[in-house]
Amino acid sequence: MRCVGPGLDSLFVDPFTVVVVGGLVALGVVFWLLGRYYPGSGLEQIGQRSARELAERREALEAEDLDQMLAAHNERRRARGESEVTADEFEATVLRELSEQQRRREG
Image 1 (cartoon, rainbow, N blue to C red):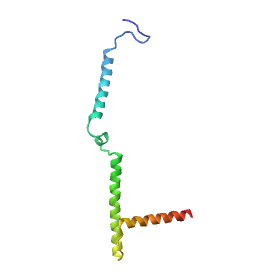
Image 2: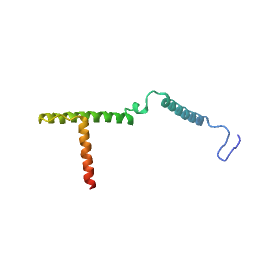
Image 3: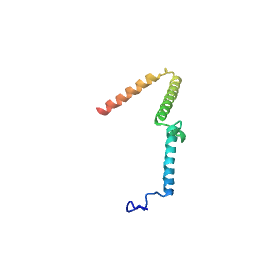
Image 4: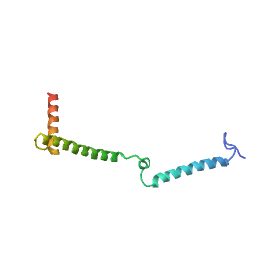
């Protein structure tokens, strides 16, 4: 046995330490390979969706809501004997009312 430093008694490493460190390294490599080459994303594995998918779903729901609201609005207009409103006409009305509100706030 040769003394190399103040804390080491020999040049040889305890076999248990080699097995534990080697096992941890092997486990890390296995997890890295699983993450790298497994199909799909980690979000899919736990039932989550990406931000892009959530935004697309939200936009689809908002478009569906707009269609439903416009249909209900037009149904009430038909019941009163008024003409129906298209989505473009309704959007123009909303923009005109918003600009009028902004103008009133400023002056």
